Image 1 (tube, rainbow, N blue to C red):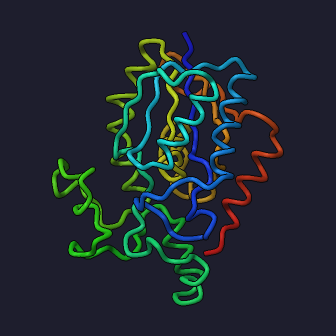
Image 2 (cartoon, rainbow, N blue to C red; image 1 turned 90 degrees about the vertical axis):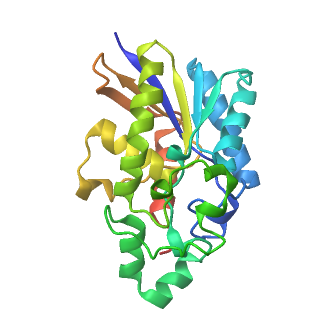
Length: 247
């Protein structure tokens, strides 16, 4: 038996457009981002792919991407689960800063390390900073040691995997087709796990916004294949644009 799963990074957000570190800041989609979400639904329709269950983060750019995609497919009735474990990586005190300006201040190599390394965290938020998640009612029920002040990708992998095993894997085992609408780094964390990508190689993986990534898995949930829907060149160009973001 084989299983199908669809990963979808949210469409372009306002802070993507403005080249700001976003992390857990809850910013909305741009017009382009909304168009990308609609296009994602159209691509799945063209391929005859129909998800049966949906998983999103608790951030509205992922939530709205899923909603627009499902509306396009006339699947707004599908059951949806949301979890902070699918949130973007928390960029700590970098959140809200311009990537190019931060690189000019701290040096491009240092900012690249904060952005792309596997296990180096950016500067942490102080707990009295209003940007700290402990002040957000969405995370009020979390144990204090689960609320991050900053994360490296290794931390995203660690907090994402319980959700994979406890929520997504059961969907797959029941023959469902889950759509996971999330973020660049939570997607990178999941892809690292699925494809067994090394800590060194995951640094170079870039996931484009708004293009469905479809996995076919074997009975042990090992990947048989994975592919972006639509034009291959468009997916490569979009991934290169992500890689080329300043800072």
